[in-house]
Amino acid sequence: MSKLLPMLKKAQNEGYAIPAFNYADIWELEAIIEAAELEKSPVMVASIPKVVDAHGCSVLAGMARPMIERAQVPVILHLDHSVSVEMCKEAVDCGFDSVMIDGSKLPLEENIASVKSVVDYAHARDICVEGEIGQIMGRGYEGNFEGGDYLVQVPEAVRLVEETGADSLAVGIGTAHGFYKGEPKLNFGRLAQVRDQLDIPLVLHGGTGIPEVDVQHSIRLGMCKVNVGTAIWHAHVQALETVFREQGLIHTIDANEFAKQKIREVVTNAIRMCMSCGKAE
Image (tube, rainbow, N blue to C red; front, side, top):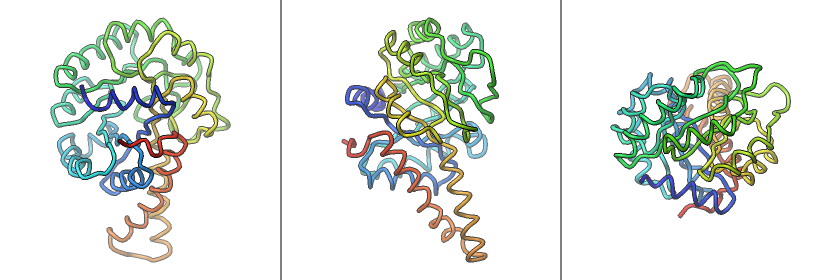
């Protein structure tokens, strides 16, 4: 099986989380890996479907593989939040280490069927699969979830894992994608109930803006992968705006080298929040 699963199990056993960062271009990818090397942390670099649609799986894998191979820390290439079974299979064929099939918007039976289809295909090729149950609130590529019982239902989570063989599971406990409006309200009780019934690695989505104390409490309750995306893109865009305002028209490389400094700061803070510093092997 992919080297990811031992990494997640080690994090689970030792009480930290693997930070997973969404990236959209080579500059963000480089900044993430550079910060991980400085902090001696394992990391995941993840492409969302919007990025896959823009570049294609083969281009993303071709760009990432040389960086991963020369990195001084473990780096996992991951497809994040795909709702498409076919996109997951394509990512597997192109050399991704891990894929997420997000059927959380579907009825349970359909969610199970889509995860099982990806698991059967990916496991035959030694690739890890992440599923999702419960809903990650917010807006964007993954959907719009407001109101209702968006939290993970424990019996449904157990059934999905038992019937699909998924390697890890993202569970809805009140997190949201994007910036939070007000203080995030995470349901730690529901998370504890899931952990009591499931031993597989659990995943916290919507990591941008959650107070460090809450992230670390989630890790103690069983989360061993934490996703951060919005903070990366926001830092990049803000940095470009700053450099163009202060220096005017400059070369793309110079502008993005400045942006990488700001992205590295975001990544460093997230790594420390996940308590994964020095955990690279």
